[in-house]
Length: 382
Length: 202
Image 1 (spheres, each protein chain N blue to C red):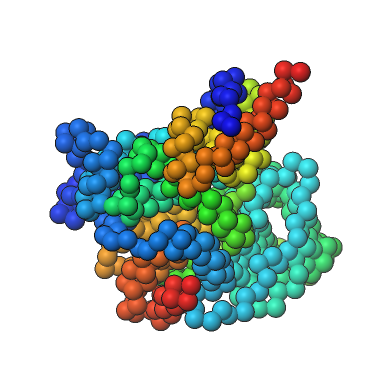
Image 2: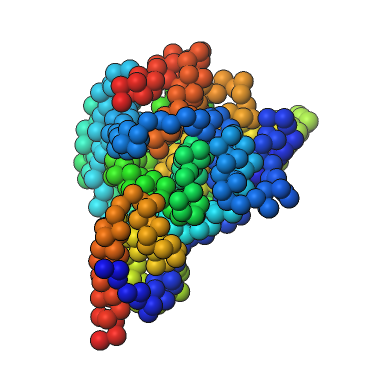
């Protein structure tokens, strides 16, 4: 029997909110839709009875599950052993704000305020890294237990309970702290201008879904302050007058960085810190400021990576498709095509995924070709 | 960032004015069936808002995922355009596709979350932000929780029939279920949600 309409319930339920996309996001989805439709024809003949289609829908999640394992673990034809994603446990004090992210062998805690206690298990692989990152410092460890405190997004104190910790404050030499030692920021430290922690962007990385940004070169550690031997003061001797320095022409000042360059460095820094959402926005700014400039291709590439890492699969697919439209001859085109293929498999778009994998089969990089081959095999087997 | 219509390759992406505005939904679908991408664009322009609304309420995913679902819905409509049988409105047909898309997306969501667990920031869902929550009254909050607690089939039935106004018989046909099954789903959904109303007025 047909149930009676419940008008009061409907009136209340009509107030349920829904997130209406803004014009830009709507345009992004429309563009991605039409790009996807342009690359395939609508069905021209029946694909078989309804049950066969239903079977495909039911099979799609199983395929997605199998492929997701590839995404999470490896891109090659056979999964390589991967160290545990979680190398540390983090206990936060009340009010601490942090994000804890990991990608393959690099685990990062981005601490913006408060205090955390970190216990890192012994890292067995050379490429494994664990870092606590603040806006003005990095703390890197291997098998240890320590506290880190941050105030106003600046490193305040590091206390080591076990093991060894390297503290790299901006503008100062790195310090190695042993168990029982402590490093505390001073007002002098706060006044020192901070050079960039990260070098320029790395060349094209591997085609894994989460290629790690190039690690900062480890500076030579300074001697541990508390163990530095005391030096007897030398007897005072009247200094000889210094010769007058020759006048040298002042070096030309370095040009101020452009807005796009500043935005790119912001994006790079936040990407390395694991703040993928902000990184994607920063790279988007670079593209908006100078869409045909020298940084545009890199910015498009890293925007797509950051969006994928942030879990924004839909926008990552759009960005990857745009990268390929804009830079079809880029040395990264194969890599992006492969990553886009995997994302398309994840949403069940097999035909589009197959095209993307095939496009990457002749890439110069063996890892890209292997990943594309694995994608085609995954589609065949499911 | 919109794509400019300056190259031959992108002409199909240009919004076609005039003719498509006069075309019925069925005519637009027929045009999609013969590969006219401009018709797909027009279909999207015409129905994207209701599809967004339907999926925002019928699927229990984040705002970012709704973009995915909307795109997949229209892409599937593009692929299946020739199989549209005119037994119900095109809007109802789109909802049927969207319901299937959201059902299968949810099944994959747990696996996706496990895969991406190490890569995402700890960002709250937009709908749960304090600013958004402050604008809604408590009853609506409770209704939303109750709606999300329904089974997928009950939720789709309620959203499709009671919120989007699709007649029950048409909804049953679109979803490929018997009328009796549709009535039962609708009844169960209304009963569960009604309990929230009755509880709040007690």
